[in-house]
Image 1 (tube, rainbow, N blue to C red):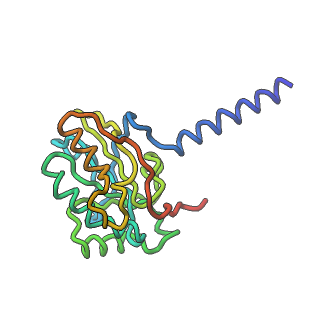
Image 2: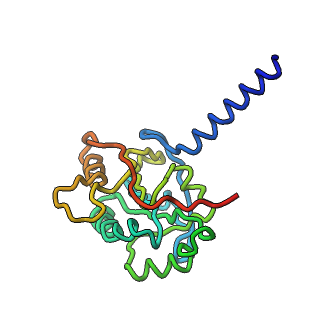
Length: 203
């Protein structure tokens, strides 16, 4: 009986750990700084940005209609906030085997076509994608940097207008970064990411 009870408890704790790892970071969590390969062949690390106040980290891809619809808005975020200390860092979240349209070569082509001004990083083993708990493309995370500490402050959608047709839209990421820059409370810290489901590595 004791052996059976021990096995049940072990299974429970194992499932709990798996669930926690799958869920990713919660608002207020310290995140692990990462380094991934950029489309120019060089690794990019968050620690490279010595003067940054934080980051707008976007898990995205090449061909998802939602991801493509937001690319101009992501470019606008980088143009506005990189000079203020919150650059965009984009990560391709899809497994390139499960989704050939997200191969490294096609990442390079897409970035050139759109004129990306920010790094577009490859996460072929999806380690960083899972750490953050990203589920969709795009899925956006606003991270605040304080010396060598990185803290998650917002996670979810860029805004609530996937078609970019509503001038009265709620701009979640803009509101979050503006609040951090002015040392105010972020009005909304978590929303549901809207987009294509991430194509996960099999096995």
